[in-house]
Length: 275
Image (tube, rainbow, N blue to C red; front, side, top):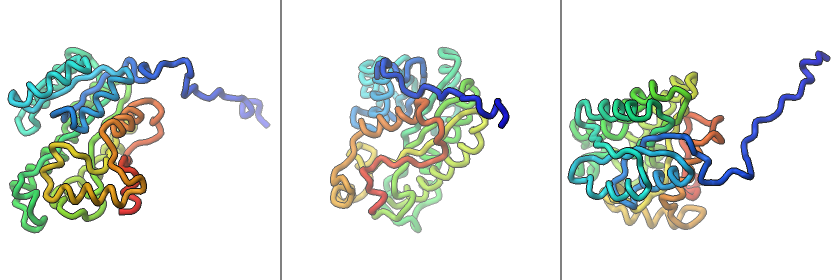
């Protein structure tokens, strides 16, 4: 047998027991979009990412929202706090230009925003208005595409793009209504972005938490019923929390997830396996 074929190649070191947990993401810089208060999924992600050593930029929706987000940004020592309403032309471009000016590169983006007009969200899918459907798709899905396009040139050493989905994208969930088709489109978008960006070492994920008591989720009709169903049917018989979602996001951002891309990662206590 060829001696070269017998050559032992040392395995990469994937865990250093001397490495402090607070340094696992040291040197990585990322954008977290969607922090609205201390109970939001985006804030759960931001706290864990920062706890593992990442440097963060956060956004706030508008001046009315800023007083709620700024103290949270200060609490986790975010390097930047910038405005972003994805419905306003040019605002997202300005955001990424500022990140490029201050940092010069970017390692990850967490997209944790969704919206549908209340009337369309509470009605049947068949009765959804074209305007309501378009708004839901723009904010909840297309904005992720736009972020990926603007982040791509900044991810000069590879990176990770993440968005938040829900089991209602896979199966019909009572009262989830128009957000079901919209989140299904978001998960399909994740797969296509992963395929297109893989050769640049940019990984793309959809994270699918179980129902959480966030302000955004409270807009879903009969939300308490959804919560009760999750507790009753999930194998763990409890809700997950934003810290658990944040830890999974930190894992996906880190190098340990380098062999995963294009997938929907469920953080729901196993609910999707039985619901």
